[in-house]
Image 1 (cartoon, rainbow over the protein chains, first blue to last red):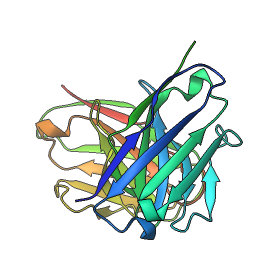
Image 2: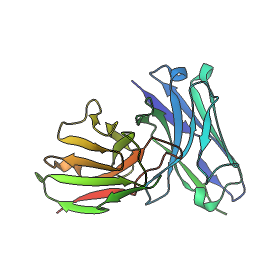
Image 3: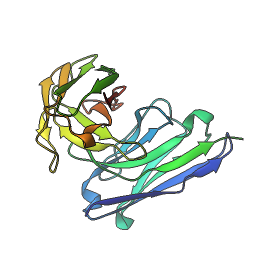
Length: 118
Length: 106
């Protein structure tokens, strides 16, 4: 069974940092592209970042470029999102999601809440 | 690429046929997916490549379209289908989502 489990969220002050992790199981993690998607309260999903299976090709939303860094450790079946210079509008539930051959995000984690507030 | 969903809100009864439209600001071939989301849950994939039903999704769901105009149809609305539906384009980055369509019980 495919499972994605996020961790590392919480309350952080504006300007602070957090590192999200996503533990993958039930599939060959190193063969799949992965994404981070976030959803602010009462809003629709917002795509945040993409990383290819080898960790070489990476894309970011303009809203997080230069502040967030996506990475992966295929040996540990883990995906990461380093978030720096956090702002109030970064507050959201963050999901990691597996990408299926540029067709869809076919599996999602349960999400982890990040709250940026003083 | 902007995705515009319509309507943003829909009130319907059990058994109704429901159609949701997603329009892209430029052509995206068939790189479109549809998701269903219920409160407090992650989005769930329904349709990929514009018209292919994800495994395990009821056949009452169908998708069509290519280029800039796409539709999600629920042929006979069931109680468990009341949710919010989103389209997403995977043609290019950033991978944008539509604004959502909330389907509520009439």
